[in-house]
Length: 66
Image (cartoon, rainbow, N blue to C red; front, side, top):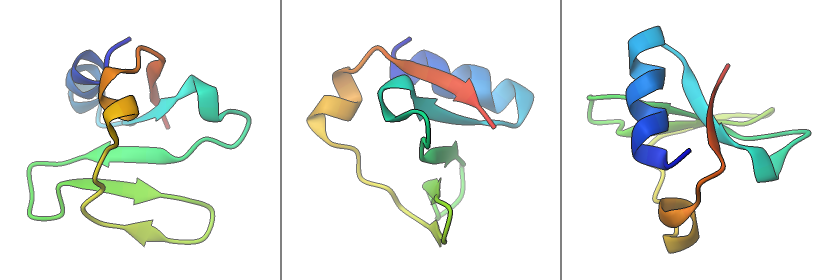
């Protein structure tokens, strides 16, 4: 699904989003309405304020995850 729809569904359930193309070890993105914006969760750290690429914005392989 597109990123907009994935974010809306994730916020309803309190979950994050990920791209299927990144499996089997996807990066988890947690959308927030805070100054942290979208938080990136990897195996090693949390990173605030993710800046998506043009490819990320037009991709249709986003899923609700986590």
